[in-house]
Amino acid sequence: MTEELQEIQVACLRMDEGLYAVDIMRIREIIRVPKLAPLPRALPFVEGVINLRGSVIPVVDLRKRFGLPAAENKESARLLILSISGQPLALMVDEVTEMITIPLRDLKAPPRGVRIVGGEYMVGLCLVRDVPVMLLNIDALLTFQEKAQLGYLTPQGTTTTTKKSPAC
Image (cartoon, rainbow, N blue to C red; front, side, top):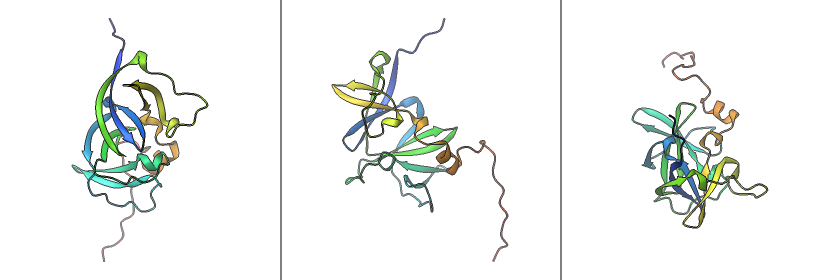
């Protein structure tokens, strides 16, 4: 007998004035924003990389991805460590507000014909205490070309060989 999923647990996050949510099954962990290492010639929304327990992880600023202005207060900013194409990605958000359970029957399709910041990355919309919350589609955050630029299309475990220059 198979049980059909009736609800989803999400992490609610704030970006500017909007509320968004991410399925907690997609989140490995939530951390404070450490010092970032710059990434030369990176995509405009990539803030840099972090070294998390030996893994170098690119950091995508969700504000920049959504075309929002820079945050004034970064004290409450957090990184959501996710997995895209089997590889880690850090998503920088303004604030993680709470974890909630949403009945799937309450999840509505994204509104058509309405321009919403980040709407193209949305799975659905629900009301949490009468406030609209947009459920993000993590897999849609990066295009095929962006995934290729970040190295997310290389089969995991393989490396590209580069010619080593002689030591000086």
